[in-house]
Amino acid sequence: MQASGGTRDDGFEEFVAATGPRLLRMAWLLTGDAHLAEDLVQTALAKVWPKWHRIRDEHPEAYLRRTLVTTHSSWWRRRWRGELPHGEVPDLRAAPDAYAGVDLEELLGAAVRALPARQRAVVVLRFFEDLGVEETAEVLGCTAGTVKSQSAKALRTLRAALPVREECHD
Image (cartoon, rainbow, N blue to C red; front, top):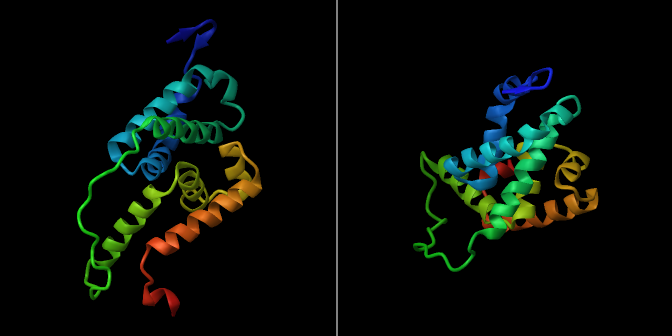
């Protein structure tokens, strides 16, 4: 694509190539679904592309993170939240096996996906993307106090939802 005076790309392709895997991981953590994560990243990139000339020299990755979170939130709000059928609750008291780590990861993933959208976004940004409180607040457009309180609520919910593992207490 051409704009007046040169290419409109101006480093957008390189930016996407460099940050794509991180953005896809973040989107997957937000959605819990690989296909939805790809759609989320594509939608966010499509929203950022027209503004690229304005944001490329500032903090484009932070801008894109915020776009991912707000786009996911708008998708989440539109989705029907009625009853969802599910099987019996697994017996978590069973003896650990060779796949216990995988099972715990699945439980953690399900517990994170069950969090309200704002708490899930805070957990993903703080603990998976390793952002600080202030950076997370900036991405979410809220105060640091909100990030702290949402983080505390989310961690309380996750602790209640996950089994206690003995090796964590050594």
